[in-house]
Length: 115
Length: 114
Image (cartoon, rainbow over the protein chains, first blue to last red):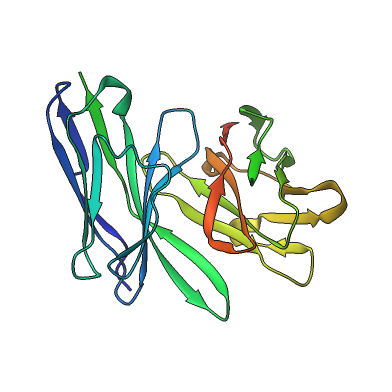
């Protein structure tokens, strides 16, 4: 099966600019996640979708970050305006659930550099 | 709240050496445990997982991990490492009512000397 697709792979912007990332999950996976991975750290969950509804966005900085998954498939994550500390890799993952067992599949990530 | 600790930030080994990466978690209920690997330039991949049953879990590429409930640990092992095992390794946990939400450790960078 095709994996999780993300674009762009790399993005360089200046602080206070806006940026958007796109994710296409594995077909049939209802749950989708966005993570932020700062260099030297593990991925940190930003937001979790179940179909097109938000399950958990408690760690999303809502003053500047937004995300949507309008048709329950593709998702976009936006940062507006960007800060230097937003430099990180943004990972998208989708989840397969079977018999109560959850397994996440990750995309290649988008490396964001804010200058 | 759930948390995961990986105490080794960077491990350097020679080829054929044995490997053990530590992982401790903090959670009082039933847990699901994972090890993910990120090879240079590649995306995160699942190495192995524990949900229930035999606490000794075997994964891909000769890796295994043992769940020791009394020690809240899920250490990753490999008897003989290869240069191609050079990567970043992440331990992760999920559980309870948030079984689908995974918390990651900070990762251990493994460097193998050829």
